Amino acid sequence: MARAAKRGAGTAATSIQASTRIAGRIEGKGDLDVFGKVEGSIVIDGNLLIDADGRADADVEAAQVEIHGIFTGNAKAERIELFETAIVRSEERRVGKECRS
Image 1 (cartoon, rainbow, N blue to C red):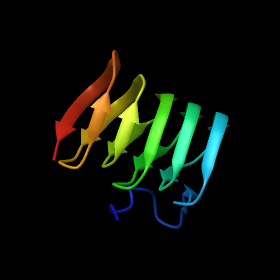
Image 2 (cartoon, rainbow, N blue to C red):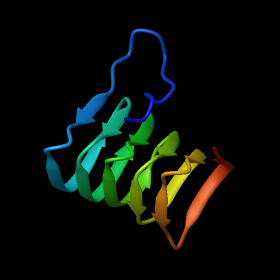
Image 3 (tube, rainbow, N blue to C red):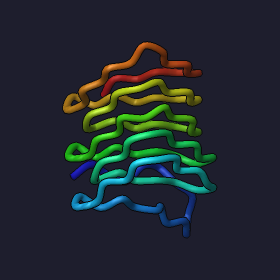
Image 4 (spheres, rainbow, N blue to C red):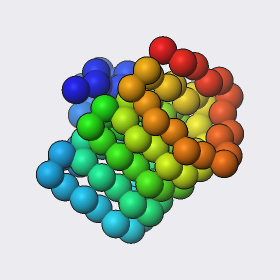
């Protein structure tokens, strides 16, 4: 399991658990941790974490994106961090800073 994305003190992320699949548009405030599967789009003002066992086939807008699992789609964020377990298929990544960990 990946470490939790960096977040402010006292804030909990919304989690999509490993046994859960969501298809459609996810929109909201705060952080989102994906341990299951998301198909569609994710628009949040917080950080997105895709766990090593998670998968997002989605277009994403978030403050920061941390990818440990599978990501297919386009991402727009100030920072995108890719870890060695990440599998990414993307035509477009718009970031302020991209890191590989």
